[in-house]
Amino acid sequence: MHMVQMGKEYDVLKENSRIAHSNYRRLKEHGVRCIEVMGSIGSGKTAFIIKVGEILRAKGLRVCAIAGDVTGEDDYRRMTDSGLDSVNCNTGRECHLDAEMVRRVLDGMDLEKYDVIFIENVGNLVCPADFPLGADYRVVIISTTEGDDMVRKHHDIFIHSDVAILNKTDIAEAVDVDPEIIERDYAKLTGGLKKMHRCSVKRSWGMEEILRALDL
Ligand SMILES: Nc1nc2c(ncn2[C@@H]2O[C@H](COP(=O)(O)OP(=O)(O)OP(=O)(O)O)[C@@H](O)[C@H]2O)c(=O)[nH]1
Ligand SMILES: [Mg+2]
Image (cartoon, rainbow, N blue to C red; front, side):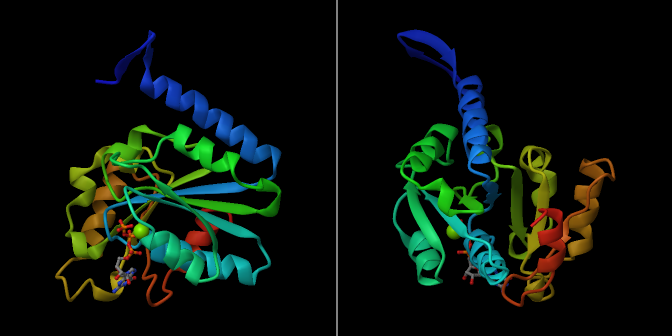
């Protein structure tokens, strides 16, 4: 499935990994911290980046976001409207960003201008897992509105991420979801080594703990 013919055969995942390493080195050369944000459709990725962007800018950090979406400029506009420097990145038809797309975006940016860059991946709990982009941290955000079974259904993305967040805890009761069930599933999947971070981006609950987990 991942083998394609382009003059010679090559492995797409291997090639992605090579470019992701080169993105990582390039970001480091410019002293930029990079956080990739993955997660389900509507889990609150854009809201999270906007909120954290505000917190970090208030601390004097220079922040930018790359808004990954299949089509359109909705997230990009929300980010820029909030005062966050942003770059739009449409995948066309693809259900995830890949390292080459990010490389092209970085080509068009002045990396000396930023301390932290967020990359919002396309809303999807499957495909992004296989395609690291070169970030320091890969974050996955799910929310209470998706039910209590996301960790049980989507092992890979939780295994391939560094920090996992459960958002929209402010409405957990209203959607009849017990966060403890999700946290237990995550602890089981990670052998008890990692904990899921609860937050409500809307109410600004849990943000400081997440910033600490991201070394921000
Ligand atoms: N109640 C509640 N709503 C939230 C919270 N965070 C985000 N939302 C709402 O959830 C909806 C989706 O949020 P987005 O930030 O657009 O989610 P997203 O993951 O970026 O969505 P896509 O990019 O389309 O995948 C918006 O209406 C937000 O206002 C939260 O903590 N609590
Ligand atoms: Mg979004």
